[in-house]
Image (cartoon, rainbow, N blue to C red; front, side, top):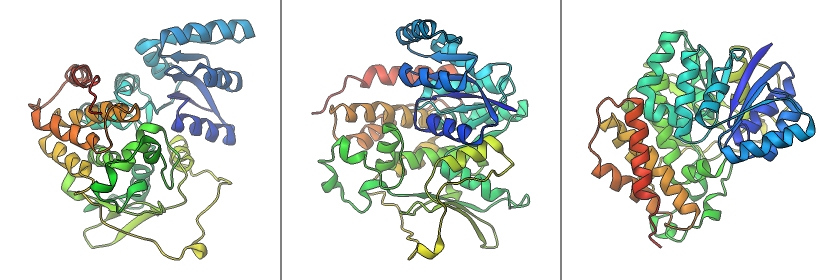
Length: 384
């Protein structure tokens, strides 16, 4: 029986991972980790009986321990980064699902790789900021990095039919989010509740906002560069508003292989957990008889400049992708709390990128210190 640890079990990817495990019934959940949602974690402990859990927030961890004792449930509870690393490196674990949002996921992922665990990767920041550390380490330790993002999973699936032939181009699809076709003048008054209405996907708040600004796609371009060892100029973003084509690869002879399906994150999650096996599922399937057509469009980098900024960050290299990612995390949080406007998100990224002096080969400590300094400098910003 395969044994897994789920880092971020209370989030969108984490809860859907547990749904997949529940539906299949032949994977053992050894460890779970959350930030502070002990209500949901308690129910997960009751159902899946993990040996170890981590609640990153120390106060919440204490409350969970008391509740488990009152209910007579036995489970080791840890907290903080030590707890996350313990969950990631548990001796019994085969696969670590890394679904925490943010740079909090980098260190546990590195330690899990060092411990020889395969990684089902749903934490973009890991490769965006530390791809130059992660991928060589995974190769050295003979560890699989199995993409969970729908687009990267699609590319990974397409490559299984490539018979070792390298694609000439990766065609990374994007839905365009809720504001596709809008002009900057129309976006000035966008409120958080508007940006959180994604037309196709059900995701956490941070990723949903990023999808609307095209930052999410910029991060995915950076991720694809490291996952598939391709240069940014060979990664082309195309809009596919229905989210039916999840991504494509193009070969030197002009042939294109695509992965299609309904927008359902449980499919790529299940593929990562059981790779290379394909498990049957009862979920709704794509019915081509119901399709009147598949829409393809070009991204608008004038009114949505975040994607262009991502390519600029890749070109600058080194620590610049960390700036792009960290400033976006800060800006999205500020926007969600009403401190800045919607268009300020991309403006803040551009401003901080322009001010940054690149560190050419940043260490993990450099990356985390840079994130810390940016948060310290920008978190109190209020433009309203």
